[in-house]
Image (cartoon, rainbow, N blue to C red; front, side):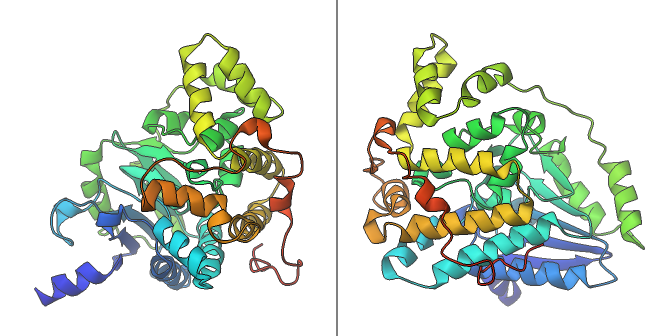
Length: 375
């Protein structure tokens, strides 16, 4: 029993089986939201396996709230709901420097995953949002299931889709990236495939067998691992983009105001509903997010992550403490739960030219940037 108890306290379970490095996010009561310690544990494991000649393949999954930690029924059914936003709120109000460390280390981890030299497989079952997307979108194989609920919902808390969101959303077909970034709408597995945010859809019931197979497979090289992926995980399902034409019609428009006006003028129920969603989001952060996605289209991953690091710094420092849109958004959604954020400005129409631009000013020089080492 003592082994179970100590395991229960570990929020990242790390195992090496045969030639596979296996990671289980083990913070199910918080929907596997990433803490700074989890980011550090995950980074440490990936760096060790990167340099370990015995490890040829890496996989990551989440755990759910059912069953005891460490039992088969406790695993799968949930990936990660993102970063620990309660910590962001607390740290921002306390002036805790760990908040800066969190984003620097999280974005460095996102970069490590995207550039990982060995195949990395993400089992994206259940909720995959925000920071959960950051540790899965760079995977060699992104597996979704009938239970997958995927989103980048940051504008709902007065933030922007970070963790590389500018990079991977801007590379979705057409203007789907703007749509997903601005609305924060939740999509399913078929939509994830259609938008290029997943590679293969499997029945959730198949995941435990596949996970076990990874840990039993003798793989002498990364080439063997790639061959195993090609044989076992051929992407055989392609979804159709839903509302694809509609999305481009509206979300290709130049400004947030143009997008919302066009949606509100439409008789289409989908457009009306989408406009209503945008009206609930932080007007200021909608403008920041639209600019972020459009700048990111022409950026490398490393440059995009450096831009996002500048942006997230400004989210907490441009207007510090309770004046921050992000602090207010988290308060309304997760702390007081009154779901009535007092956005400043309150309306999309009140966002003045230059307000969003201030977020893109870097507080660092190229030589002092915390992510200067990313290539």
